[in-house]
Amino acid sequence: MARIIVVTSGKGGVGKTTTSASISTGLAKHGHKTVVVDFDVGLRNLDLIMNCERRVVYDFVNVIQGEATLNQALIKDKRVDGLYILPASQTREKEALTKEGVERVINELSETFDYIVCDSPAGIEHGALMALYHADEAIVVTNPEVSSVRDSDRILGIMQSKSRRAEKGEDPVKEHLLLTRYNPERVDKGEMLSVQDVEEILAIPLLGVIPESQVVLNASNQGLPVILEEDSDAGQAYEDAVARLLGEDREHRFLTAQKKGFFSRMFKGG
Amino acid sequence: MSDTATTGVSQSFQLKSASVSLTALELYYFDSQEFENNLREKISQAPGFFKDIPLVISLEKYQGLDSELDFFSMIGTCRRYNIHVIGIRAANDDQRRLARGAELAILPGSSVRESKPEPVKAENDYAAPTLAQPAPVKVITQPVRSGQQISAPEGDLVILAPVQAGAEVLAAGSIHIYGPLRGRALAGIHGCEGARVFCQSLEAELVSIAGHYKISEDLQESGWKSAVHIQLKDDLLVVTPLDKA
Image 1 (cartoon, rainbow over the protein chains, first blue to last red):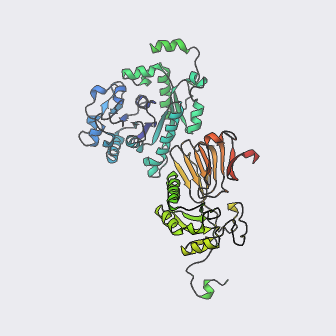
Image 2: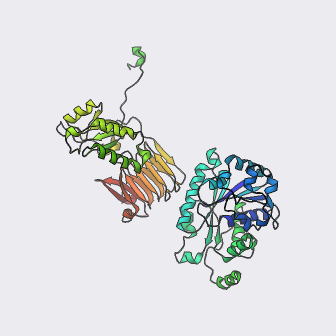
Image 3: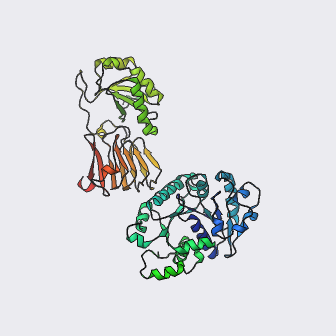
């Protein structure tokens, strides 16, 4: 049985897809057979970040509607062994994700994969509900600002009542907080919430803190999951998060402002 | 020991004393159109609270003519909004006669005009000595998240976790929060003025007791971000630090 992880946030633009790409790549690098499923029907992005947009033939909705088999739709990643992508449909609407259809696909994936990573769309509507319904674990992606924290809180509440585990009265979904776009200098200036602030408000365990970095944007534009940028702080932070997800105990890094980081960041940025 | 066994007659019921908290509608004057408008407006603020509740019409502050009191019209209007008028209180003799005509129960009021004075009601609603059973207490151990609503429609509500911004907690009695209160807390939703709100850190969007409320802006002056309890004194919400209670 696969472990099903949803990457969600409520708010848009906080880094769900970036996180889905890196976490799934990281899990595969650790030797776990992983599939990352794009639930953002109509606003397909995951294939761009995974650099497989030119290889999409069939998609998630085709599989649900029986127009293609799962094997036809799954795209094998060229860089990392044991990593597959199930792309979303760009031309359909979110309602095409029926509850029964999603369940059937997830069950089928469950038979062959160790991890299923579900990349949720923003919002709290149908698409997001479908993405979180089957989850065993949830990575709640949050930016250190109040509106993002509020939306994360909302999605956590929805997970408590609307997930499969909640409906069936099983153990609750295991929640992880992933703080992205963290800028310690701006925290020091009081322009951003600190890790402690966000942890205290949301009251869920911290999986990782991803520093704000030009590398993330560059990697996305090149179709490279940032975790593969192994020399960058953001890449290492994602690698730490994956290790923690797999039960390893690692200390949190990149939480304080680096004094000598100016030049190195200039070069990486260029 | 003269119970059913000795008399040989089986009892189909037993009368017990009970104390329930009710919502009272304090009527100042009566005009059927205005009455309906005001009622609709009140209900629209919190449709869930008013569904199927019993209501007592309190005439203590009634200033209109007794002849204008059309109980049939009031009952009909309330019924349309799923509210059940069960009786009146603090009525004079004429008003009682009208109420009997409308088959309403007559409840004693806190001060009755033109009639012999009733014993003064206990100040604290909790002090009712005839309580057959304590009101049920609802205990919540999970954080109450933004968008969630937790209600204890009969008794007290105890929350052993934070109440987040955008969340709402409601209780007929008091609300105890062993964590920060960042959302809205409404105690005494059926009008119990003795209800209180307790929290470890007051960061609330709104606190209400028996319909008297204060919003975040008005709560900043005393006890903000500290452990407090909030009670109703002379129709005003009073915030007191817990260590000085």
